[in-house]
Image (cartoon, rainbow, N blue to C red; front, side, top):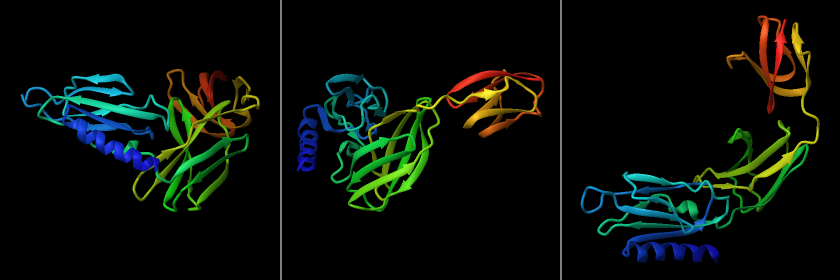
Length: 259
C-alpha cells in the first residue's frame, strides 16, 4: 500500500506542480543521484532550471548547463528525501531517473551483522537473479571483498567467512537485480578487531622481514615508489639496495633499513 501511495504522490506532484514552475519528487534514498535534462528557457540565452532544493535546503541555483546531477550522497541509505526543482515559464526540465527514489516493493535487508570470523545477513523478497556484493570502506572508497549469488529464497539467510584487514573495519552489502539493474544497500556496519596489530622484525634487514601474522603489505622507496606488494608472513628483501624504505602493513606505515 505504501508503494502505491508513493507512486501516486510522485505522478500527481510532478504533473500538477509542473505547470506552476516546479517539480516535486518524494521517495527514499537508495544510493543513487538524480540526473536532470535542462533545456534552454524561452529567451534561448539562459537555462530552464532556477533552483534545486533537497529536503527543503537549497542545493543548486541558476544552473548554466544543459544537464546536471543532483548529489544526494550526503544522505544515509533509506533516508526519506524530497526534491523540489523550480523552473522558468515555457520550459520544463526532465528528471531522467526519478525511479531511483522509489522504495522496493518486495526486497529489503532485514539484518546485517559482523563477527570476528564471519558475516551474516538476512533478506526478504530476493530473486534468483540477485547478486550480493560485500564491500569494505578503505581510504573513503567502497572496495569489493567478495560476491555471493542469491539463493532465491523467500527469506534469504547468509553466512560467509571474513578475514578482517584492519583494526577498525566498515562493511556494507550491495544487492543488485541483474535483470533490471536495481541496486539496494544494507546499512553500513563497523567491526573493531580485538587482536593486536601486525608487527614485524627486524627493523634492520639482511634478507627478509617476518610478520607476526599473515597480512597485506607494500614496500615503498623514500620517493613513494611501490617496490614489492603481496600478502603473507614473510617478505623477501635480499635483492634490495642498501637504504631506508617504508613498509605499509594493513592500515599503518613504518620505516626500516636494508643493510
